[in-house]
Image (cartoon, rainbow, N blue to C red; front, side, top):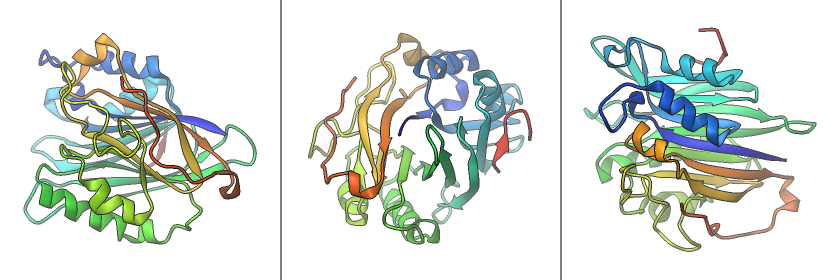
Length: 271
């Protein structure tokens, strides 16, 4: 059973030209046609994005039947945070507070999604995250997430994905936090490398900030970044796309990092 996952910091749909153009984000997402879309920096009711609910707008435009939004930052007018759009049913969702002390509010949006390409469906737990700007903050946030009940209560044979904008320029979170908890990085440029596919800044990427980690009976088949010229304009990040295969635990063999090709829950239309 296969599905496509995409993670993308959309920068409030404000492109490199400083213009609010959600149509560009829609076109990029439509081209890559992912089954599950993880978005960061998603506005709701903010003047800079015409007071629109971006999660609803994108979900309706792309016909994603299910969506969830976790608004982390409250502004004078409106809020913004993470959003998950999917063609598969969301059985539950919650937002995990990852804020450290006085710093900007951050969160991990946890959704349990039933992948239904075949019967019976298989549940995958997905954590959509946007980490802080300082190394200390990121280490604390990942430690808090990995020690949270939402992670520790999951069976070892449960497919789990943690993905999003990790702001991890030096690629240290894998070694310091994820590997010891059984997670493998799907977005490394080659097996064993600490360096991820470059996604930021979109116009001429130098840093691999957007990463995908996975654990359990699941494996990546292909992982790549968008090479669309439009993606270079639509946001300051490029999206990363991963094709995954789900299977029973006994049918997956041990493997190292994949050699990559560089390059509240609601139904759609409701609130």
